[in-house]
Image (tube, rainbow, N blue to C red; front, side, top):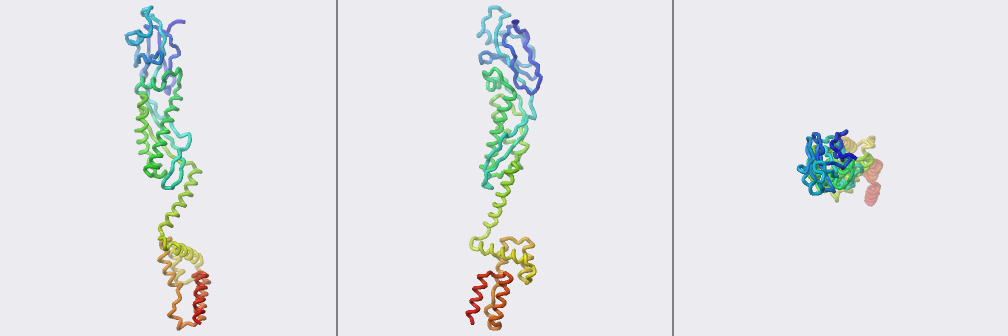
Amino acid sequence: MALIDTIKYDSVSDNELVWKYPRDDFKIGSQLIVNESQDAIFVKGGQVLDSFEAGTHTITTGNIPLLEKIINLPFGKNTPFTAEVWYINKTVKRDLKWGTPQTIQVMDKSLNYPVSVRAFGLWGIRIKNSRSFLTQIVGTQSEISSDRIFHYFKGEIIQRLSDIIATSIVVNNISIFQIITQLNELSELAKKIITEELERFGIELVNFNVQNISIPKEEMEKIQKVYDKTLEVRELSKIEAGGSFNAVKTFEILKTMSENPGDGGTANAMIGAGLGAGIGLGAGLPLGNQMGKHMQVDNNSSSTNSLEDRLEKLKQLHDKKLITKKEFEDKRKQIIKDL
């Protein structure tokens, strides 16, 4: 088999990061051609012998000094030797896509509920240090694909981003709904952390952004239910403990009366206007006091009203649901006791 005289790689795809020359039998004096945005590296026994930038190079022991130490030179200029030649593509790779294959599980403290989120975006890289890249990524492997390399780094991106999202939500106490509105800040933070990781492998992170963080539809429905319950509890918690029962009961009475406009009366008109204006539980207490005034029977008027009239008025209040059954019975007993 004739020894190789010319070593060259014409990439058919700009997406290739690294390519290994298919043969490893060369001779001193061979021509090595390296195109623009490429580096060529000679490797023997897992050891990097030397690297070459763009241009045409004649292989000699002068430009690969280690060759003289690891081979004999019985044939002088035409001495054969074996080595691997790896070509590194140093062009910028932009608009590479990344995304979470599975949802990221985080605990949202504002809801006190576990939330599943997905994220995706774009990133771009350039191999800055070919030696470091080849040594740490390729190592002693005889073959390695660019898809496998991209898959590895996308895994690193997702891991780092998962940590960032979890930290923002759990440690900084930011709701998942807030973090969705902070994609620019999140992208900058993630870029800084991912840059430090890639630099260890001789790779420059050219661009990185988080385009979207989303919550699965079924997860959103669950969160909405939890959120509604949380708001309800928060509203109830604003009511003072001593008046909570009275406030809730007042609200129930107001609601019943507002739904029966035919009953008439000053109190009914006042209540209908109040509920129509959106009076909540907090307003129920003062309004309840007004209700109490209407529900009270003035003992001082007993001298001018017969017991029969008092009982009749009491029954009317009960029929209109202005007083409870227990209040009706208690007052009725009191009136009868006055006989």
